[in-house]
Image (cartoon, rainbow, N blue to C red; front, top):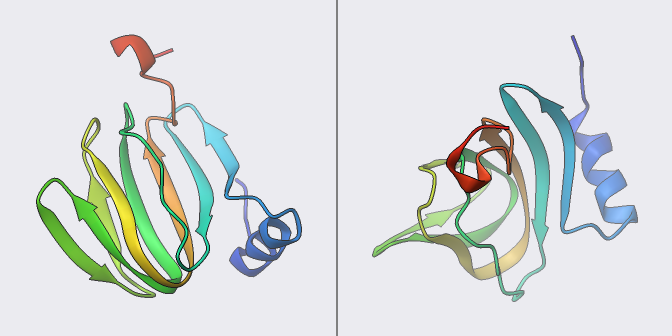
Length: 113
């Protein structure tokens, strides 16, 4: 078992000015914090794994395909692997808790590592 404090993880990420910080990787999933500043472009590319976003703080619009949704703290988003998606119109600094299943990057090339 492992435990984490979201406030501590966020503070550590802010101190290191980290846009992405993975803090857990086990065979079935990985987790990390994704941070974008207000007005910053989200340049992420589609992932080879399913993912879930939980908005911790901030305000933005989430775009996937032709679909758009305003997101605020407490919003939860599921994105299927290989789907084009990104945060746009980031109005307030955004902190997002991200879950990948299986772990991020583990299905590159179409086979689980």
